[in-house]
Image 1 (spheres, one colour):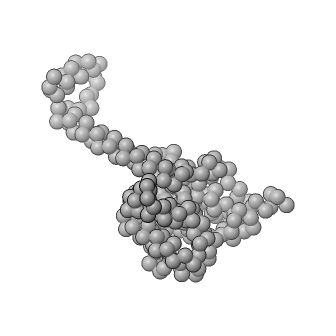
Image 2: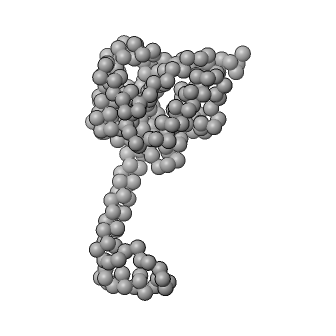
Length: 242
């Protein structure tokens, strides 16, 4: 059956007064080709995420933080409310630019919660998100050099650079490891050059993080509506235990 015959049958089956979505066979063919392209991209993205999950041994957001939302974030202090508002705005405008975010502060101050809330909102809208600790990431890169490795260094780098939002946690925990700075530079520089957003969670202050990452990366992280938020209040977990 020709495409023209398909169009005629569709038009004959339509209720009276209904305007067809496609006026001719060429428009129908163009729509089918576009849908095929969209489906191919979706399948490629799913395969990439599945591969990353196998290599990293985890899903995009850890189970502990999969229920984190903006609504259940504890925002008693002015600084916490500021962090909440800025994080909400970042999630809502995601895709309009490629600026990243840096959350700096001690353990238990809510950095992971708000990063996960951003990620969970993006996941619900069909975006791909990965949150990974830098020590874990460094271990996975070392494994690519072993016999029988699940992936190659180049493939792992490609996958990390194609996810819509990559959040790097525990930056600076392995401070002094020269390889960490090199790998982070490669990932962040490549993602930002491709206009892909990066989030960073760290307990380092601005001078220490600038020393680790370098001027170029730090400057690019905060451009194009990127943001730095200091989580400079006491640990919520210690407060709950006391």
